[in-house]
Length: 205
Image 1: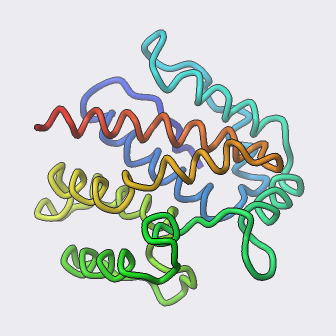
Image 2: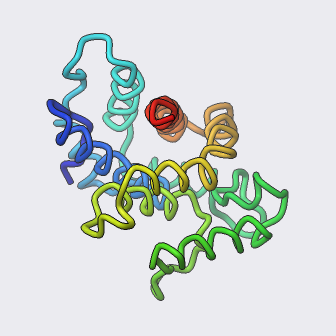
């Protein structure tokens, strides 16, 4: 897997945005396996522009990946997000937006996904408001071939409605959890990336 945020031109930046969303979706959906951790071991740690906002959070994430192994990070993922019954930290937007799983925010999300021509795959057991699923939708809205769907206006609307209101709360919960190590670094990078997205969308007016 080679989706690491290195950009040079405007087109490259859009490709990199999509790849970052893809990487975030993969890491929040399940613990990275040995192959993905191996990709981090050779990933660049410097941003193309010196002092770039994402450079330090990215360096911390790469360092955390290099400082763990598949078994340890799998155990960390299960301790934070898995287990029987109530998890330590929820990964579903409805929990943060309404206090309940499978609530009105999920119904609104399903309506918006249907309007975009998207639906949950049969093999996916998690509801559509899982953060990884939302990141995957953003990746599609950036990299998809259908210009009527994959455009900045749709990206801005989807992000503002379904991610921006609750993503900081998730990232803060993970970053502050005593069992979080790799995922604390991932939360820091995710939050920093989301801030850049917000700034970019704000510039659209």
